[in-house]
Length: 270
Image (tube, rainbow, N blue to C red):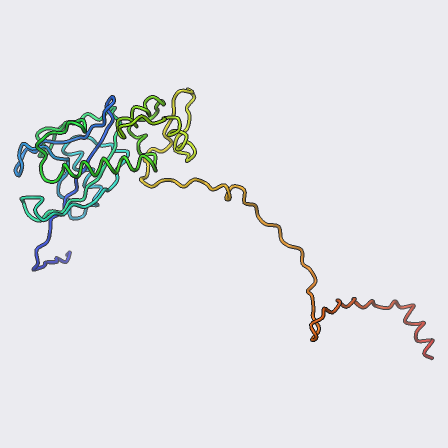
């Protein structure tokens, strides 16, 4: 029988929320759900809910996305932080761990379920006015985290699906950063990292990782490439010094006398 632990002091509740993004045409969109139950019934929020007692945090965020929106496959997801303002939830002391995720536009059609009355994609420039809890702030934090990762990892290529063109990369960068950037330079950076490679079609590229990490891969250093195994040094005779400090010439090895010379020397002695 499992041992039960009880405490006299109050304990906070724990939830997991997910800010899921996609590129639709020339705009970045965020997935939101309309609450079908109180509190904040009828308001728009991020998909999320309470974490089960034996459930990892990211697994809880993925489960809530699946239950409330029907979206299952999420190639990229990263934790962006914990939100614990004591008054953020009218139900009591609730701490939320938030995640940012990316999915390709193709096949990302939501279907409301569980306690969500509706599920819908919104352009980030025109999200609903009525956003409950502190989810408006979480959306801003999640978008900034995605933009930062775009400079250090291959996360942004998840927006574009299996293969993509330089024009699609230009559109994505403009939608996310608000300025026109050179797609060739951006692609070349990640080709050097081994995250992007050309396809048989010269005009298309392929993202090399099925599930990209939020950490930036390290570039192989030039020193590591050119480094060779050092050759062993030839052994040299050790230099001996006399007590006076002068170098003493190395003594010559004694030669063994031959048998004929030994006999001659004996005769001479006689």
